[in-house]
Image 1 (cartoon, rainbow, N blue to C red):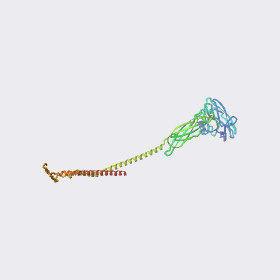
Image 2: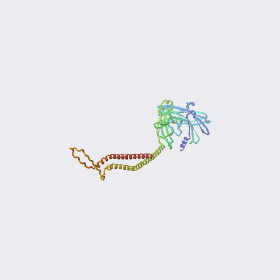
Image 3: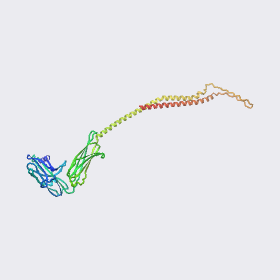
Image 4: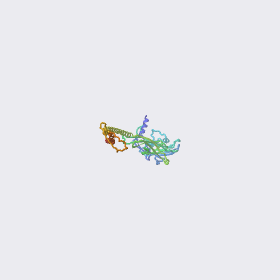
Length: 449
């Protein structure tokens, strides 16, 4: 339990500085004296100007390198020397595994002494060897060496400060630089239908090859077949070792919900080593769909459509009621007009009846009735006497008033028939004119309503 607590506190309180620049210097307190030191690569004689050690070795090959420890303090210090697997942090800086984590790769290939005592203001060069296993895979294998001191606390708990540099070993063989990417997105909208939302895109890039890479991610969010699109460039990954990955997030503000968006990430990878610069690396890409349902907008449209439908229904009811009122008014007007035409029709019928009566009674009025006294007309004709002539006949009396009356009545009957026809025609025309006038006035009245 005590060892576990010590390891945990060592992780939390450890201060690690691995050389990525030509000035790896650290300071610590030991025995109430300030300790300052630095660690540099060496050629066995002194500093050789390198910032770190970078080698290209064959499987099974062994080489010797040197590190220089310089004590910048005022008293002698004993430094512990360590070697461990290396990695790159999220910010792109190189680091070594802490003491509580076991190395499994290039950190196990390095052999170095456990500690070294360095006098005040002096330099000490320490050799170390790198032995590549025979079954080592081709590619880059990061590791590091460091000089550390322990200060404060007790033997179980304390602060370990260390300074070192990376040892990058490339095992010869087929190099296969490659990268992969993943992406996911989420839309965050507003309850206000007149406010746009935001799309948050989470992506990760992984070095799936066997060489160090520099990667520049680019993210695009689009919809409507590319008519609406947003693009952004992620933070450049300066250096990433094989097997490592980086995750990041990019937010796109002022995005309107258009049901679905396409989120695409493209990672353009470039090799770090100059000998691989001319080799093209296929960009890594990933695709995802982001659902952006415009719920506030859909609800607003539904409410607006419901209001329009209610207005239309009310308008239709009013139009139907007006049409019913107009139809009722038309029926009432037609009934009133029919009632008004009855006296006129009766008058017209009376006129026609009188005319027909006159027509039928005309000949009878002129002819003699049985009660009238007959008129006797006697005509005597005395022919000239001739010997051979026969005796003259004696004319018979004639009561010819009926024939004369009939002859006169026939002439009067024609005039009476013409007069009756004129009366009937006039009555018909008068009725038609009256009916047409009433119909026009009724239509005019209906239009005004």
